[in-house]
Each structure stands twice: as structure tokens, then as C-alpha cells.
Length: 195
Ligand SMILES: [Mg+2]
Image (cartoon, rainbow, N blue to C red; front, side, top):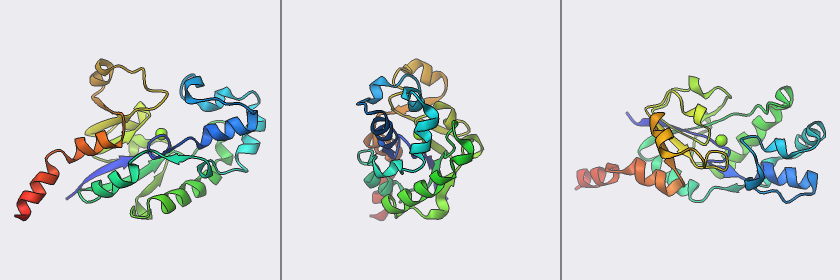
């Protein structure tokens, strides 16, 4: 049986759309360097007005794919069951967050057509997801996995190796790191067994 991998979406598969909309709305040029902590919306002066604007837009129209994510997931799919698991509730507008479900679903269908839609899970509490391996940029979301991979992002850069080691977490700076780590030994094994 293949091992399972939970892959987060925002800041792991795609990035940039949320901050783009903040800059559009505010008339600013913020970068992720300006974000203090995890929540980008803390940059916004009037959150009510911003989120009224935000839900009329689709952040995924303005984001980019993280480099190499598509090709690496295609390869990993040969050896693992891949589940895309994404939170869709924005804490400032929990009851109006439903629109994000469709946006996320459509984005994943378009960009990762080789992942079955049955393998999408939209949920905030990822600790109830039972996968062997978890890849996420948020430390708390890695709970309950045998292999925990923290995907480097603007808000987690400062965690040092020792701290992560104490949590049983490995850092990956990019998708090529993940490919190397998760295919270590596997591709050689399968090519020699074909001989
Ligand atoms: Mg994320």
C-alpha cells in the first residue's frame, strides 16, 4: 500500500494572491517582508472594508504556482497517495468564507488535474487528517504525521533547526528538496526491481 501525503495549498502550492489583493485595495507595495507574523490582513487599515472587497475577488487569479510543485507532485504521485488539504475559513469572516471553497476547488482542478478531486479536503483542523507524511507551512498543521515537513515561508523562516528538531519537524526550502527527500532510495529500488 502506498504511503499518504497531505499537501497544504496556500504558501505551499500557490502564493501571492492574497497579498496582491491587499496591495490593490490599499494602494501599497507590501512584500512578505512587511508581514509581521502569519496573518497578512494585519497590514490592512480597515479590515471590514477590505474583506468586503476581498470576497468579490478570487485571490487565485492573482497568485503564482510555487516553483516545481507541479512536476514534483506528478512524480510523487507514482509512489504516494497525494491529498491536498487546505483551510478555507478566514478568521475575520468565518461565515462568509464559503466562497473560498469554490475558488480553491477550481484552482486545484485547473492546476493539478492529475490529482483526483476525491483527494481534496477543505478543513481548518488538519490534526484530524490521518496521513503518513504532512507538508505545510504552518507548524501546528503538521501534527499527527510520521514525517512532518515544514515548507519554508515568510512567517516561519525564524524557526531554527534545533527548535524544529525538538518538534520532530524537517524543513524543506523548496519542492526539489521535498522530491529528493521523499524519493530517496525509492526510484533506485523500483528501477533495479524492473531489471
Ligand atoms: Mg499554508
